[in-house]
Amino acid sequence: MDGRGGLRRGVMAKKTESAAVPMVALLRGINVGGKNVVPMPELKKVFEGLGHGDVSTYIASGNVLFTSGLKAVEVAAAAEAAIAKRFKVSLPRVVVRTREELAAAIAAAPFKGDPARVLIGFCAEKPAGVPDPARSPKDEIEVLGMHVHMHCPEGIAGSKFTADYL
Image 1 (spheres, rainbow, N blue to C red):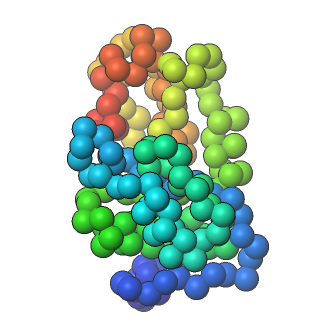
Image 2: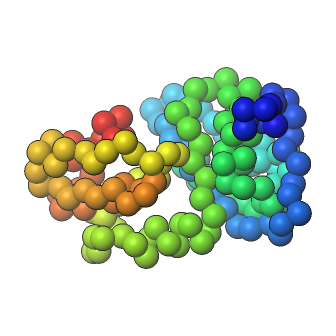
């Protein structure tokens, strides 16, 4: 640690005494339109190099499944630094959730229905406020903790609640 609660650069975080738990890392803005290209086999190696186990990736999505004995916030900080160094890309944040946190977010979802129209945005920090519903009147949006739940009856492509806005 660097005294401010962050990890020192170039130092792999030590595993805690707790048992490794299943986690997912969500990377936004990679492999879209030929920008921020991050090959999944190389991303897998980065997570393995950080000391995580059972690492796998999902297509070219930037979603990484793994196990770790670290806290999610520690994993995210180390992954952000390692990814920036290895791939020379600028990512907004790496969001990490445990399997239990992911399941709880899904269970708490206030909107049900077609998965193509009901979405959850996973934030690295709790959003400062609730987005203005007038921005996209056909859509419903609710912030619960560090998750933004959306129901977009006409699909996300037509919603004004874009990632940059949220």
